[in-house]
Amino acid sequence: MAQKKLQRFADIKTFANVLEYPQGMQGKWHAFFNNNNPLILELACGRGEYTVGLSRLFPQQNFIGVDIKGNRMYIGAKRCLEEKLSNAAFLRTQIEKLTDYFAAGEVDEIWITFPDPQLRVSKAKKRLTHPRFLRLYKNILKSGGVIHLKTDSPDLYFFTKKVIELCELQLLEDCDDVYKQEMVSDTLQIKTHYESLDIAQSKKIHYLQFSLPGDIKDIDEQLQEALRNEQVD
Image 1 (tube, rainbow, N blue to C red):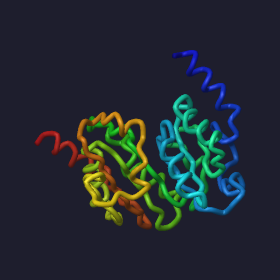
Image 2: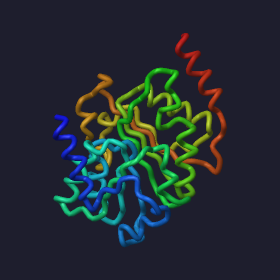
Image 3: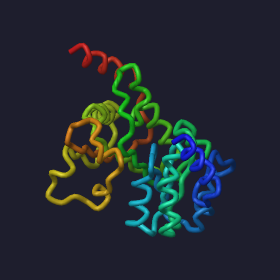
């Protein structure tokens, strides 16, 4: 297994659609894709199922899967090369460093698909929909840019709804059980490896779509206090 992982790390260094900690990419992504199409990120992309799936569905948009784990990223990147999906790429870096790679207003949308829910209250700040991350996304999203969350974790789902409420964000879509809908959109039918595992054993997939206002309210302490109170209850 270790040898396989090392081989994948070596392989992605040769992939034209994978950039590892690149320098000077802020404001340069349209040149990279050689078009001016909208730019959408998949954060904590893992194997990149959404980056691959969305790039198939929307050839007139550009997609970048972002993750630190190159051995997982290899799977999606290789598939894109095999299918000649020129509107998909992968960026290997930490999510906390997004502003090192994207200029203000360069990103149109963000997808967060089955991230680690970081269930312990003490680790709430690591949740990818925590206000500290929303402030980060705000720096690179266009005005009115949309964020999508798809998760099997009811804890992360309700946590994000609380963040949306406290920060007074614009909630665009809220679905407690995606596959109970009469019609499921093509985008929500894309399944990740972790979705198929049903790690949360909730047998439900939750989806939220929301946009960010001009400023993200500083509600971090209020949010942490609410989480502690819920834990006590």
